Length: 455
Image (cartoon, rainbow, N blue to C red):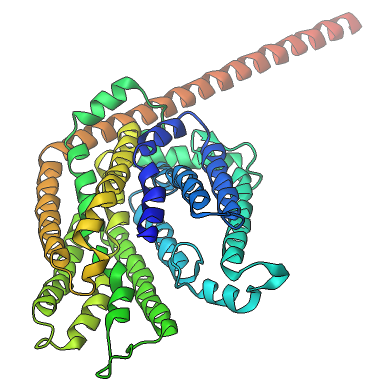
């Protein structure tokens, strides 16, 4: 019960600030906003180490939720501004996979991480501080360092580069703007009321958030792998797996997650398709959901290996988020404000739904035999397939012509600017030549006069 409250106090504050944070991000430099929130998150995490009661922890976790609300959507939005369709999914996939890597080693995000084990084994009792408090101290220090680096390492926006980024050259920004023009993409702009109205008149805002929410919730069963392992008993009633085994086995699933997030992302950029690979992951996701539904209903007659295999297969289809967000960028290259708002709606919508749905669908008291968990995942994966195919049809029918028209306008505008610059350069050269000729003529006349006088 207390663990549920802790999770709720951190996830609940993320619901409303998502859109507001992303709107602020269009006015405030990302290097200030994202780095500042990261810095605050690190400080709040460190303060948990000196908490005296559960109430103190609840309060601090509320602020943690507020501080981290911009992290994932903010970075995803930033990546959309910099990378082209042949590069974006790989970058998003790499960034997204860092969450899984963090879960494998982090002492905070997943309490079975390898780093947690190392800290508890080596620092417990050191300086009179309990091991669990050291977890938050070390995590807080690492986060503060990363937050400080963000002020000089984040490049901000192509049309407003970070002046403190010593490594970022003027030519980099110019090249980034040229790439935006070449691929028919509009430069980042500040959010406006007109942009918000335009966003909610678009088809995309009613598909991408639902797709994102559905894919994350549909694949949620893998989170309960450790509860499944913990519930298994030997014939004599003793636990089949030790505590260290329960902590270690899901790390293998995390490794599968990382590898396949990269595979899906690389294939997406290489093949220049998003929707087909989203559907492919949904089809793979159906396999463990169906198998676990059968195992849950008939645990004595269905081999236990079915459950083990199903949990590990679940890790294969956790790469939908980078593809969905890359697809969003492809669908609306001409409207960066709409991309920003839709990203915020998607992430905020997920937190709003998951805050109550997971308690109902995956109650801990039912582990590992969930009455509705795997069946609901089947329904969600089917919804994902249907909506993905529908959005693809809408894209080809209506959105693609708008993109091509905008791209042609951008390219034509760039050509006009180049021609004007070239003409201005020629005029300047001609003026310089005329001035030079006049000066030469004047000099010659002077020389002639002088010679005449000499004669």
